[in-house]
Image 1 (cartoon, rainbow, N blue to C red):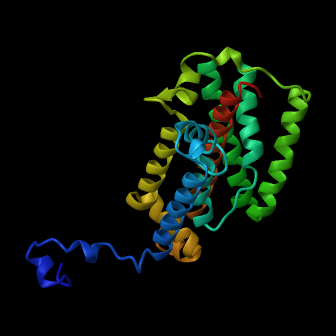
Image 2 (cartoon, helix red, strand yellow):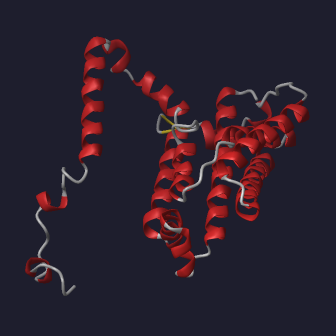
Image 3 (cartoon, rainbow, N blue to C red):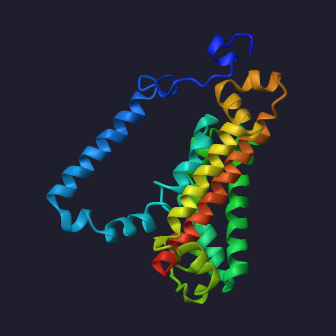
Length: 251
């Protein structure tokens, strides 16, 4: 590029200290360092717990499919678009209820994910078409779908033993001793990172969140972008609900 330095124009690589800017990433660096220091303190204080794999296996099978993992990662897109979705708890229940109601693991998985996607689309349409603030719309959706699940199940739980097989192994099995939930969360993180940073859709999400009017003037279909992030949120919530239920063996 014309504005590049002579060193870069000559094809030389930048020194490592120029590429890694601790001042630029100070917050992230400080968080990682503090987490490492806390881990050392805990490992020294309770080595029987913190130096064995069991505690990490437990964390890797519970954290990825709860609010701290897959749901939080996907909710990032909604927040960047300057929206919010508080209905994900009920969407988890809807997706899992449909999954259990089918009684067939493979078909149930597809149906449950489709149900979550549908609820997410409905949330997006309510926000976009009717102009209801997403905070209000998704709180209402939260209560509505929670009620639907309670009425549909009669308040009675269900065993997920019918799903013992391919689906259970896929979602809650182990890969090289590591709970499958962890690779799934990492996969979600990589895909969402690629969407946000390497795809046109991610650029549109940032544009809509920064200034929706300007985004429209630039040709971005902001309504479609906003509906899409809600749909992705519904899909992720249904997936997390099904996976967490299979881990607990009961809905």
